[in-house]
Image (cartoon, rainbow over all chains, first blue to last red; front, side, top):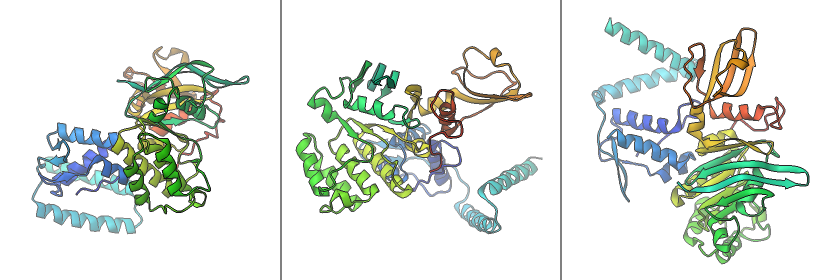
Length: 130
Length: 298
């Protein structure tokens, strides 16, 4: 089952963080059709956030057609998001994790890393288009 | 949508001092409401008026559609935890639960027993020897086990360390998810309010300065910066909460429901913390500029 995390410094609305984490898990194949999302009560017991926030995130996901709430049973994934080949994804996730670990031990903070990441993404995808 | 609390021109005076004045607001059901403001702003007075512990000097307040504290039925629909989680120091945890069951017709024995078990509280221990966090949790259980439709909590986490605070909020949110009760809690801690509340009431110097859904409040407040502008020439529909002008630049915190179309302004979103602090810094809000009276860090 997906374990939600909360980033309180990012300034991103809490419900959007939950939606984003489900998107990511779907894209990476960590969540698949048929999987159950934690109940609002389970999420708030862990994160100490407002249950309405969880319900709002689930409503958004439902509107996108990604999950469906079944009364009395919970909320289930009904569609996956198109990802690339899972083996390729895992290989790059592992490589990225190693890279981030070394960046961290070199003294780079999250802001530095994000700035570098954004710049690199812009750079490499611009190359692809040109 | 029915209001859990509705106040019109509500005021409470002690001698010559108005602890709360001209308070008009409507709190919809199903919200977790954060009541914020400096000490002495009137937060406790408002909560006690809602609990029926105080009678208004002027105006009117209805809670769940009725006169607060007007009947035993009304009392059973509202749970109130006063500041510093009052308990009987010499009475055991089990004794508190027995008392709760005896005094409250709708007492949920299963809920109370389960929460006590989850927290690992010893039933034989006297309340006086519990830690601050455990006392706060026990007071919450006593208020929530009567299954109220509205929970009023006066500074429930003020005296707790960060871990106990987080655990208290986890327990509170779990209870809200389970029972679907509305909650009004006063707090000095903006980070906590930001985390759990979806409705905000800002109270300073006995007056309500802002009240509304958190998201709507955030959407209607704008941090604007641009070339210097004579404050007298700003649109009439803007309520300027905060402004600073240097020779070349004006920086404003503005409340407006209209979109800001003038390209001269750079419009940045406002965080809940910015918004609350701006109201607290307003002249006449009863706090010194350098002493906002609220803790920002978690």
